[in-house]
Length: 110
Image (spheres, rainbow, N blue to C red):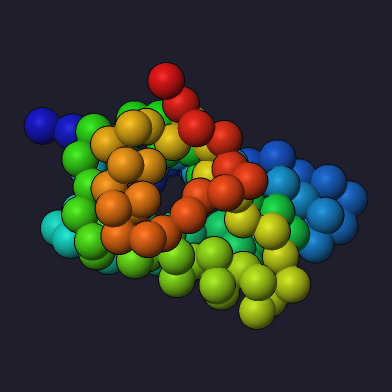
């Protein structure tokens, strides 16, 4: 069984506010996994000025999963930082669209 812990890949620059953090989410972006995902998203935002979240491995998503992404993006904005999602699978983008949530400006996967 796959662990629900996100995988963080760090890329540092001279100044932490310029650092880019990359985070790869697990296959399940659901209520049972969002606690750990939320903590890692917030920690990554504190470490770097920019966060790239790779959703390429996500195969299932519920409203709690989308909510944690929306909340993290709002936190990033309040902190004056950038968060973007990449490799957004159809299962996530379609569900988000159905709920009126946009990933505009982010990179969608196949």
